[in-house]
Image 1 (cartoon, one colour):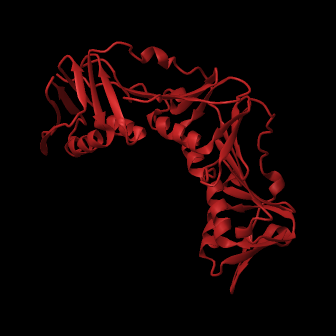
Image 2 (tube, rainbow, N blue to C red):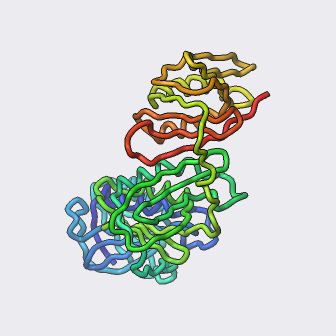
Image 3 (tube, rainbow, N blue to C red):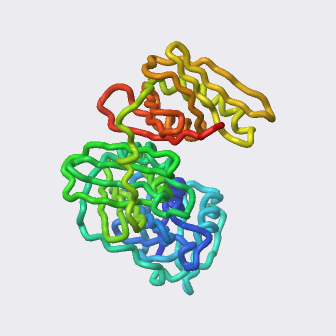
Length: 376
């Protein structure tokens, strides 16, 4: 195998597949990146127990300046290899596989010889039957992930909650995540989906998927197999394992009647919560308190060790009963950031019942739920 390529274009592709490569693996060859070269172009693959990423760099990609001299394949230790490529002196480099799986990397006056591994020993990626096809705009998928993945559980005690539940039915795609203290649920309409599905994708996989999606990609195809899902764009295949088990029925958690409602502009409320949490973070218990009256809404943050903060909030409208409620400001900040720049209405039942946040106008089907903190 021998080729010459533009270094910065190659580094981009390498960085994408490296998201799937872990230094801690029981299969030594998986610490490597698999490189396959043929007439069509260059394929790079990285994999771990949860995700596999394969990228494709076409021979006619102008930025890549790919010159193919001889096709072939090799596996190289990913961490060392990427450090070498990053530090090469010229804009292009040449990679050549020599005898005994040794690999020469040359750029300008620098020449490295490193040991490779036999690519035939690299595990095969799952074979995808073309089923459960769903096409989504990339920006819609990354937005869906951004609006839900922060609410997955970080604890392995209930593995199913470490994932986001995706359900497709009646041309509606529902994505929901909960760690049992908060929940975020978003529904988007989809067109021409071929068959319904109900899957749970690990949150960590979705974070990496979101980071791997390029701006230049317009659409992503989703294919579901027995225990894998594949996200496919023209230049990348991203595989993730699915979580096994039944996701809890989150719909029953969403209340339908409320006693107090208040509408805020998200950026204004977020800034106030950030100020209040400056002190709550320093304390032993990370809590802020909201006091709602018919004519005033006040936010309190208190840390016995540091001091306290009190701020009268600017709101758009308030209706219903007076209420005092305490909550974790970090949950509130994550929820508000997912909404972005808009107005939301927060619906309360009582100081000890979960409250919900929803966009105050428009057709957006997006609801978040936060469990308050009980205080004496």
